Each structure stands twice: as structure tokens, then as C-alpha cells.
Length: 304
Image (tube, rainbow, N blue to C red; front, side, top):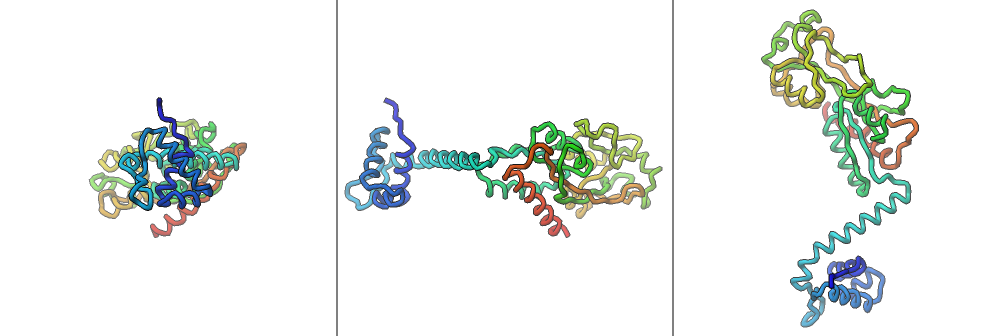
């Protein structure tokens, strides 16, 4: 016959182990000691194993079999506790999952700090993360696939969205030190700038159709993500704007050079938390939006 231990029996088993005895486990669980002993005996009968040595010692001591099963019991009880906590949260209106869409310009240190804090504050709430450039993050929110977005200013003013400012950073035109623009007399005029290929991120969504942002070259290399743009510029295949948080160390070491361009000086950019106007934030998403604002502020202070 297959063993069918109950979760109650496993909780009793762990209580005896953690409290060091049957009477202490009874006090912890607010039960009679006879109930604790009966629960352990039933569990042993179900498993066909002796879990505790009861002879020759004042306190029950795990047998080799009991020690082998201890971690399995802990995993099962941890799962039960997570289920209880998640059910309680859902009953109180807490989301089961926060779906977050983030623009690639959000500093990665900001994102990781927010998610680390979120895991601590809401351990039962799952996270689904989307990333994209330009209109991609807003598009996921607009389609209802994400309930919170962190996007640039151009996407924050769509009429179907509610937005508020959470922070920002700086973007700077850069090139590899071997690039002709890195050795050109500053500031480089637009007429000269347009002759050198520029690496530009293209929007995979429809929200910025027909719009370019800081595009000055006649010849553009268009990519769909920030990592590729960064790699091509670093390899000397073109020039372009990159967020300073991403290239700070490369600028310091000289692996990239900040360009002095007449039409395109370094500039600040802002990031906004957004949601659809017909879908208010739940408690966890609201907390996350506020934490982004605090994390951006902390990151700005560190970088100064």
C-alpha cells in the first residue's frame, strides 16, 4: 500500500524536530502531548519507517531514515505555508502576479533593487517581466498584458494611460575611440555628423511610427534592442546615444568617448510609471511604482 502522510502529520514531525521533544512540540502547536505522539506514530506507520529513536535517550532523536526525510518534509510544509499566505493575500485583494513592462533605458541597478525589495515585501506575489525599447513597454500595458509599465516621456502622455514621474537619467552620444567623430574638432556640426552611420533603436510597436528621436545621419543602422546598439557602437561600426548608467565605466576607462555634437548635446531623460486608466493598481503594483521612484532617487544620489 502506498504511503499517504498528511500535512498535519508532517507539521507535527517538524515541530518535534525543531522543538526537541514531544512536550515542547505540543506546546508550540497548542495540542495535547498524546495527540503529538499519535501523529508521529501514524506518520511512521504510513511510511513504514521509524523516524525517532525513543529508547535510551530522554529526548527523541532522529533515526537515519528520519534525518533523510527531514528536508522533504520541510519543503512540503514550506509549500503549504506559501499556499496559505497566497490564499490569504488573494482574499485581501492582493494580486497573484504583477506583470511589469520596462523600457530598456531604465537603469538595471534600479530594476534589480526594486525587484529584490519586492520579493521581500511580497514573497507570495509572482512577477512577469517584459522589456522593450521606445513604445514596446507601453504597448504591452495598452494591450492589458502588463498592469504596470516604466516608460519614457514620449509614451507617458497617451490618453488611455495614467502616469506619474518616477525618475530619470542622462543619455549621451558616444563612439569608439577609433571612430572619426571621436577625433573630430568639437563641436561637430550637423553637416559633418550626417555623413557617419548612426546606430538607432527601432520601435517594434506602432506607437512611434514615423517618429525619430535624435537621428541625424543620412545612413542609419537600425536595431531592435539596446544591447546590440551598445555592441555595434563599441565595435566602432557607428555612433549613437547611449544611457550614461550603461556606459559609465567605459567612459571612465576610455573604451568609449563622449562626443561633442552641435545638434545633439548630452541630455536628461525622464521615466514614468504608467497604467491603463481603466485598470487601477493593486496593492503590490502600487507599492512597486512607489519603490521605483525611491530607487531612482537613490541611484541618482550615488552617481553624483
